[in-house]
Length: 149
Ligand code: IDP
Ligand code: MG
Image 1: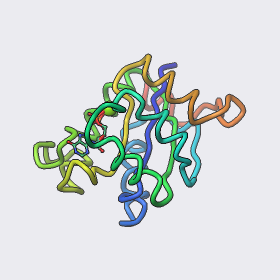
Image 2: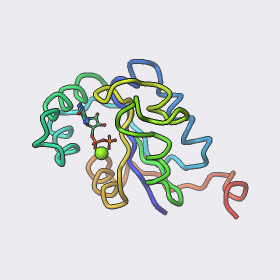
Image 3: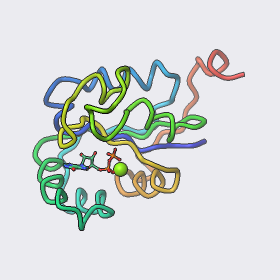
Image 4: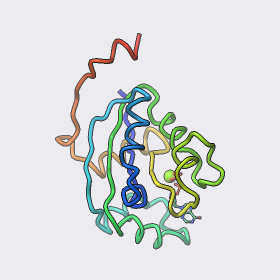
């Protein structure tokens, strides 16, 4: 089953929005398969955002992600990678549609609440970076027949 990596960034944790974020993915019908509340090392933050290492905001981004705890999660379901990106909304919260997490809960790109993998291959890389296989739980929700034909 398709899986994606979702992280509630330090601003989401500090602002008490952990429950709101998790609720959106739960009520949509995706399945949580891994979750941890953690402080992020500089090394992990730099690896996670490696693709942006030449960008001017890179150091600030790493400073921010390591400044306060995050919630790292893996969610699964058919089409979860693209669907999670839609739920999250555009990178710039001012252009993110109302109804998306960024559209509803934040205003600046440098404090945009949440990370979600942008493609299936990225999700695989990010899940392997943040979680060991032993930390991921394979289980079936009792709602499955009420969510899927
Ligand atoms: P995404 O999180 O929507 O995938 P990316 O372009 O991959 O967006 O950028 C990763 C993260 O880097 C963004 O979520 C945001 O936190 C930060 N970021 C991107 N562009 C800027 C910027 O211009 N200024 C400050 N931070 C930025
Ligand atoms: Mg990205």
